[in-house]
Every structure is written in structure tokens, then in C-alpha cells.
Length: 247
Image (cartoon, rainbow, N blue to C red; front, side, top):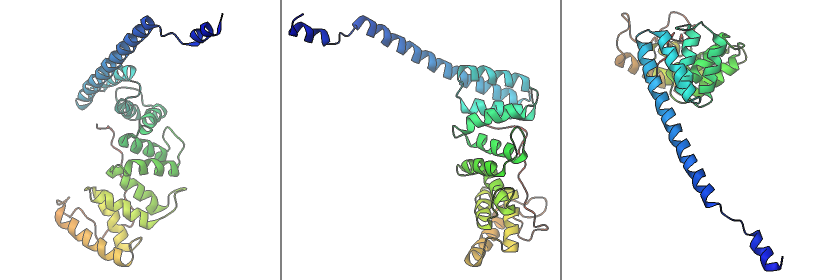
């Protein structure tokens, strides 16, 4: 073989027929993926409808069908965790619930982040770890989840476990939750206001005005305003986790 033949031999040949087949295969695979994702959404909607009707076994079956089609669907992961945690339509299993919550939480779902934080705080399905709970609550709270904001404030308020006590952080997260209308956060913020913890000087005056404003704006709750300015007890109230999740 002379030099020119060697140079020609080194030039790669494009197998046009194979390229066309490969392109068609990619397009077909893409369409199949889109169909699967669309069907997964339909299963999610059906499952939520069943869940709202308290037909939990059927809801769980729908969610399972959806997750098989789209294993990375964060909302399907979350609602599977909800039913496994509550034991509705399926035997209660905190460890499985924690696994599904974690999958969704790692994708940034704020409800799943809150729920995983709750399991860490309660020691259900995962070793009790207040620092882990605070970490997941914070991720959820930073996305505006009011219950996560309140519970993060609660951990800082009491200095629970390996979470350092920090009244200023507690006041800040209580305030964020209270501004969204969370009655427990308003009460806990009232406790801090009354005791002067984490709200010295100028902050006390600002919080006083904030509390008065909320007292006027929030609807009456059981004969008293939504803000507890003069709390009966100094113990913060932890927001209880609902038994069923919402989308």
C-alpha cells in the first residue's frame, strides 16, 4: 500500500445506513419515554383522586403503576412515602417511607424534605437525629414550607439534641412561618416576644409591631386572636405532621 492509499484508509467512513437506523431508534425511544412520563402523570392524578376519596388501596396501586413508568417522578415518590408512613392502603412501613421521601427530597421536593426531616426528628424509619432533621427542615423551609419553618424554629428554640440553641434563628424561622398564617408559629413567636429571647432592643420593638399587626389581621381562633402575645406557657408548640400528604 502506497502513502496515498494509507492516507485514504485512515479517513473514517460514515455508515449512513447505520446512522439513519440509530437516529430512528433514538427518536422512537424518546417518544416512548414521553408516553411513559405522560402515563405516569395520569396514574398520579388517578391516585390522588382515590386518595381524596379515602380509597387508599386503589390510590397506592395507581402510584405504584406510575412509579414503574417513571421511577424518578418526585411527587409519586412522595405520595408513596405518605401512604407507607400512615399505613393507609398498605402495611405501615416507616423505613420504606423514609426511602421514598429521601428519593424525592434529594430531587428538591419541599414536602418530601419536610417529611424526611420529621422522620429523623421522631426516630421513625431512621435513627433519631436532630441535626439531620434540621438540615432537611432547612431545605424545605428555604422553599417557603411553613411547617418546616416552624419546626426548624422549634429545634433552635429548644436546642434539641445536637442542634445548638439559637434564639435569633428560632425567632427568624418562627416569623417566616407566622407570616404565612401558621398559628403554632405565631404562638411560639409570642413566647419569644414575652421572654425577650432572641429579640433584644430594636428587634423587640419591631416584633411588637408585627405581633400587633397580626393580631388585627388574623381571624379569631377559638375566642382569641391568632397571635399569642401573652402566652400561658413558655414551651414552643411543635407542628404535628398530617396523616396524609397533599400535592
